[in-house]
Image (cartoon, rainbow, N blue to C red; front, side, top):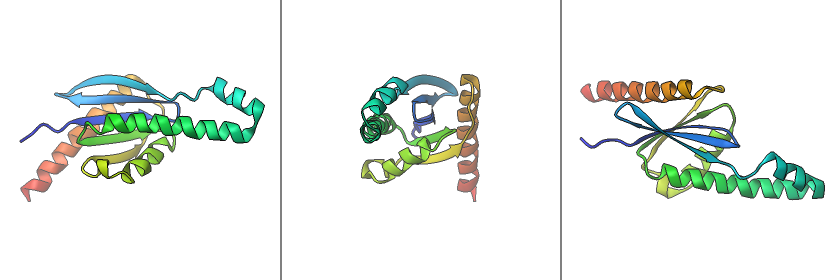
Length: 137
């Protein structure tokens, strides 16, 4: 049996904490969106339309960077307090490169790093048990 590469991502529109689960240990990495509050204020000073265009472009780049990270995994859990996780999932589902990756979305409130790590470990340990039970039947 091969080792399944597992990744948990706690995310909102500003940043994503990537947590790779390997042998019950977590490797942590952060990806930030380039659209800062300062960018928003500067763009709004010129026009609201410009601000929305700039925000959409930066958000697209942010999701693309996350997609590049996700491509290296077999199972991915997206969780967090905003709709960013669902937006990312919709983009990934439209791309055939992600067809073989099992991606699930779970709602979650703001969490500490420790709570996020526990959430990821609990999610993947529960899924292993469910798969084992399913395979026995």
